[in-house]
Amino acid sequence: MRLWTLHPRYLDARGLTAAWREALLAQKVLSGLTTGYAHHPQLIRFRRHPQPLMAVGVFLAGLAGEAERRGYHFDTAKILKMGSVRQIDETDGQLLLEWSHLNEKLRKRAPHLYQQFQDIRIPEPHPLFRVVPGGIRDWEKQRVNKGPQAIPEP
Image (cartoon, rainbow, N blue to C red; front, side, top):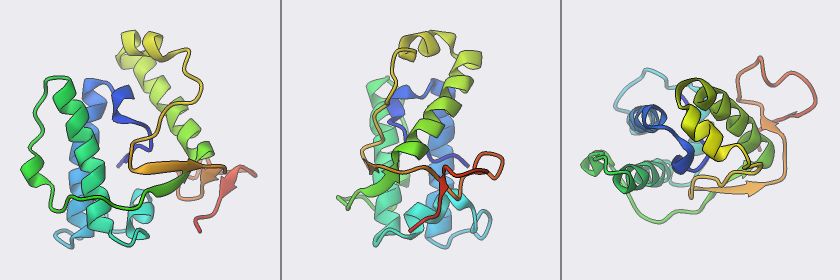
């Protein structure tokens, strides 16, 4: 499961579709409709939000908005709760790690987007997130968070 901190505009078609499916799964987990993936680390920041289902709804709405901008149709009727919520703080270290990870994917499967974005050093976050100073989150995959740059969740 990858619930990108990055703005959905940077995702290729495959990544945008996968993000939609994975966020729908996250919504299902957070609403108690499935026990699979219940302890997935990507859900930590949503669970800690005062309105977790609304937060994931805002996340999904951002993906659907990008899909619509591209002429795709994501069924927004699948979003259980929508509305305005407090942004989730996410670190610049996490954002940059995800940017690097996405660029590797784009280099292989969408070289035109990789070229288009190659001069971007600091990408925009998904509107749900507010970027704050900090390192890579400790919930990120273990192979990444060895060393001093990983920071614990508050």
